[in-house]
Length: 231
Image (tube, rainbow, N blue to C red; front, side, top):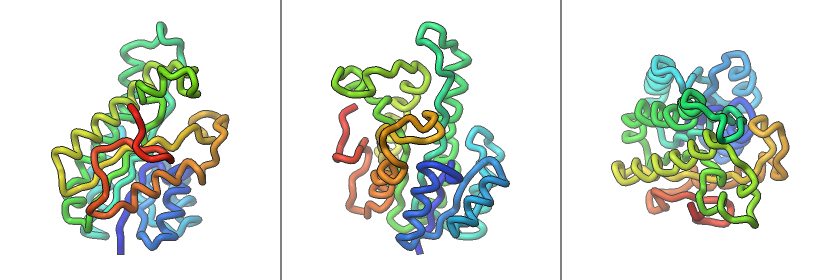
């Protein structure tokens, strides 16, 4: 049995990824910081709920201990939880604004990954998928033909760029674990007030695909629906 943890699994891309991986035979721990919403989502999915606030060290450690006691190891980690940031013009973004967004989108992913590394190293062909964004791609955000060119978000965009580099560094440090970042595309979720043209089913495709890579699969990369993405 493959054991998987997905953060931010109570809705959107996290929920759909959980649904699909359960369908593929995984035992999924659906992580969420809101207990009521998390338990309701887990019940709908047939998943196991674990409370985890990725901005809180004690919460993350407790979640790792919970999974360790129940499962003993972890095969797949999907760092999906994220926030949209402050939505201010670039020149109005403060250092504290940046810190707040990075606390979830970058530091949160690092916090969770670090806590679960011992369980992943005990897993079968372990995989980590970090949900980044095309808005974190320097190539995409400088290409006038791409929708990313039109979005100026200093905190959010740069946090996703940082997450791709975080992914690369982990991949080099832990060659026995497949670490990859993914771009789900402009997907209709709460993060963008459901303005994206892609469905969550479409957006989750690349997350699921990279969660299912085997020990010979790629690592240290950034992927979208078409394959390796420029960044």
